[in-house]
Amino acid sequence: MESNWTRLFKQNPLHIEQGVFYCNAFMATKGWNSIAGGNFNRLRAAFETNPLVRVAAGLSPDDTWGLALGVQLFRHHKDESFIPEISYESPQGESVVGCGLRYLRKTGSRAYWESLFTIALSDDPQFDRKGAFLTYHILF
Image 1: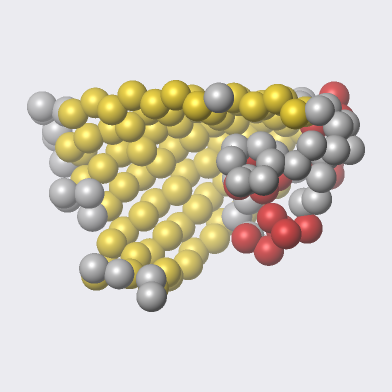
Image 2: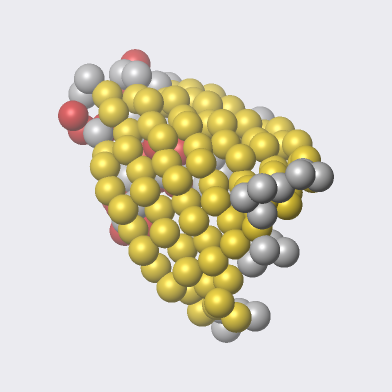
């Protein structure tokens, strides 16, 4: 389930023109795999700093559910955006809390920089994640 709300800012001292606030919630039974990816397995896959870890995340061996809250803040006519997010997931009955900040900067009509900083904490060390990732995208 996903919901979002767009808000235009009339006063923008930080040059933030628009914000899209969102909330994503998911619930999956043991062995379920999302065909489209979506926000299932959020903290271990979509919320990862290294995209290669997404490949190795695999299926959840037990029921899991989660929630992610965030906002995408647009500046400079949507050429730049900041996306702070907080998430909660309960894989295998363990509580995992995470937060992250993604920064996107358009450098041309078909290219942009992306940086991602994340941290996810749990009592079970297999779910702990900390990292930063920087990449440059060129769209063909």
